[in-house]
Length: 259
Image (tube, rainbow, N blue to C red; front, side, top):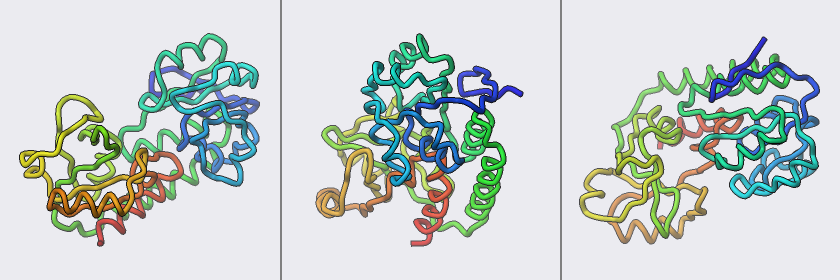
């Protein structure tokens, strides 16, 4: 049986795979699927589960990958993501790694295909199906829960320059599950913006994510005084990490909508 990744590339099951993961959320998923012994490399941002990944060699970051380190690890598979990893880096990896597995979840439900892709290629299908069952149960519960008043939110991921997310991102799709929407500010998926009365007229509240920029409650207080709109700190991992953390993210969303 063959398993198809985000680029349409087909991959056969390989029980002896040597895996390098360049995607923090997928590193966590692979560990939860019992595949940690086959992980021979990970990025410095792959921090979950901490007690397991600390023993897996680091090969740089998601953008600044150390190709020489990866070459020495002799992986059979490298797992990458279209948003998180640079295309030129992936092309160079393909010169010496037999299998590049490309991922690109855009909707919360895409986590089901992601888990089955990882479980299929790396022969952990039983665990993958068990995870999918738990995810489907949480997703169904979230979809049927009573929704509050729809909210228009500006989800901030960076400052200096200020950056947000567009409606066609995974984060926006997560927010949509509880009836929250984000404005479209141009054509970029992660657009820059300037604060203005016109922008603020389009939103009911501002969300400051704890990652990739480390917004804190101090930023919340300062910005709320500046713009005169409700500002809230949210857990960026729960909102943007697919794979294992997405299951917890659905529960987090339910609590967020109930506040």
